[in-house]
Length: 128
Image (cartoon, rainbow, N blue to C red; front, side, top):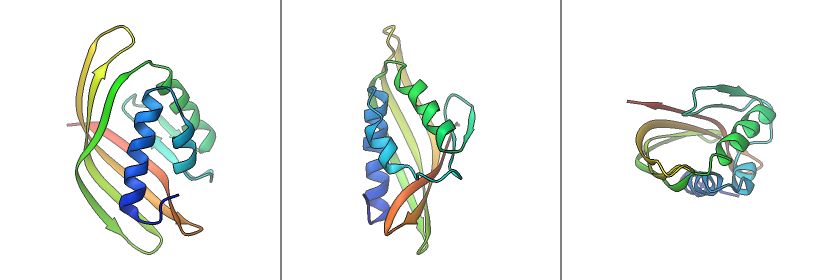
């Protein structure tokens, strides 16, 4: 578990790449286990609560994406209990059907310190 905000962001994107490859193990660890979490991702659905957020990631991980997700232009703001990162997410790869995907989207990830470790409580993306 990450003890610095930068390490938490790195873990989030490492877990995100694992999730896109079909493995949710990292995402289930980096996200808070509380029920006040939320996700508004590239599919456009607002998910609130741990069960709904994880169910969305199950759907996204089953899409069969082969590629990478990278966070560029990262900016951090941190207090003792909360922190956030804004960045540009760059996605490159192929769908299960062989269609090329290239997308640059804005993203905000909010973290909360829980038992001394940074955990994700909200993630939002949108195209610009």
